[in-house]
Each structure stands twice: as C-alpha cells, then as structure tokens.
Image (tube, rainbow, N blue to C red):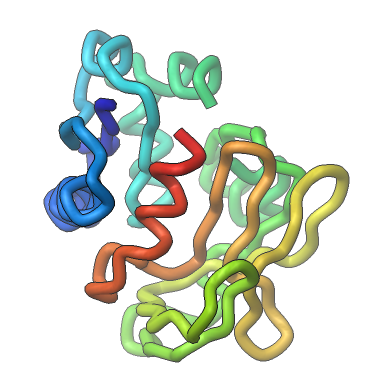
Length: 181
C-alpha cells in the first residue's frame, strides 16, 4: 500500500510521518510519500490533503497540474462567498458546505478532546485557522462536532477534518483512513 500526501503546503512531513507510523503500528505493509507531481499520483493507493491555506493550496494544485487529477481520484461542494472572492477552486467531492476560518484566525487556534463516532474514547483535536462544516447532505455523514459546528465528516471513502489529526500523536484517524484504502 502506498499513501500519498499532497506536498504543496501545510503539515506535509507531519502527515507523511503519521501515515508511516500508523502503517507500522497497524501492521500494514507500505509507505507514505509526498506528492508534488502528476506522476506521483499514479503511484498511490490513497491520498491525504494536509490542511493549510486553502486558496494557496488550490492555486498551487492548478499550477502544478494536480487539481484535475485529484478530482478524478477523489472535498466540499460549497465554500460560500469566501471561495468566490478568492477564486478558490473546490474539489467538489463531498456533499457539504464549509466556512473557512470559522473558528477565527491563527491566534484563535485551540485544542479540544472530542467524541468521534466510531472511536471508543475522545480524540485530541488541534484546530489551527480551522474551517467548520456548516451542513451536510446526501451521503455525507457528520462524525464529530465542536459546540454547534461539524468538524469531521465522511462520505464513502473520503474523510474531511477541520482539525489536524497528524498533530495529535493519536493515530486512530490515520488507521481508520488506512482501512478505507
């Protein structure tokens, strides 16, 4: 099994490390690799897109010729007026609407232990300039909330998180992802 981590911006090395550790701890053979070129995509069985500044990520994915390829393989169908203003292209793969920076800017970053559907104990969630999932429809299912906001959802083999599981030290979400792959 080979899991790719989009390597254009965000916690790339942290994700590669977390996926590799989850594979080892879970007894899965394989590797985690950064994906920076279209050729890299052809070599992976699953893909992680690290959090980061979504406008920058969108523009870099287009510039590097990765955007359309990722859509063919693979999140939100609606990001409201913020996406329109910044001309951010959405992958449009999950039946959900998001609010960028819903919990504030960098200085409002926080951590919280949250219950997640399917996990037997709380997960320590790290929120940095975090978005929120405003609503889901169709096949998209909310899996966790912080206060009144959805922060984790799943649709088929896709998982969307408003927090950074790679920064928690807890590999359960990465293991869950490996099961989906």
